[in-house]
Image (cartoon, rainbow, N blue to C red; front, top):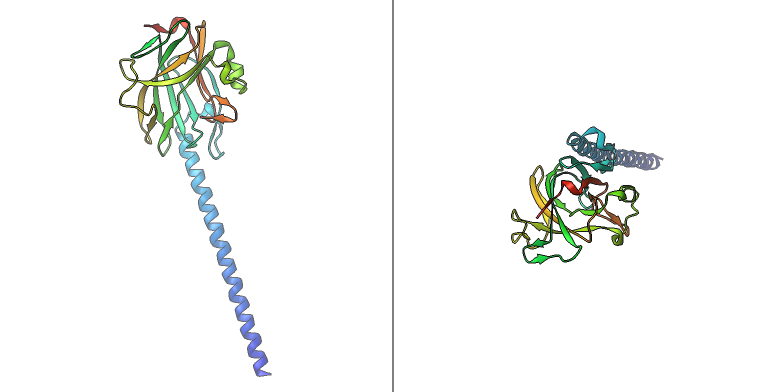
Length: 230
């Protein structure tokens, strides 16, 4: 009888220890989930602090969601979230030039380059790769907004990073650019154009064939008389 009681006590204590261990595991998992949520919330709050309130669509989303910004004017700043890093990038279009010659690269006939002078600022906490912009007719704003613009309908595609003399940048042979956290830099980008128009849309966030380089759009409408010709 004593032996039976002893066995029952041992089983009871073992069950109690297992229950306590399970509770501790659940508590640790809950604590880890809470810490992860708090970290995500902190990242979103930091991103939101760097962005104008009017461009934020959903501050609590992960990553933060921004409104599409169509109809920006020369000198305005647009904000996009990168597709690959999920980080905010501020973009300002300072000026636009039109040329058929970029050093050894030349265009003939109706084709030419629009050269956009941009200021980029990395508002995130890690490195950002800058994707080049595209161009469309000024009347295509709703087509761009609704992701109905195809590559065949594009008036222009981002082609080259340029130096200060509007030549293809010999220091950037990979034809790419990136920014460290908090870094701001100016870049001239040549957009290869098929033909002229009275006004153009230069934009970031092209969506074609289920591929996109930015999660939202920032688009500038530029009149032909605002463009310097060289």
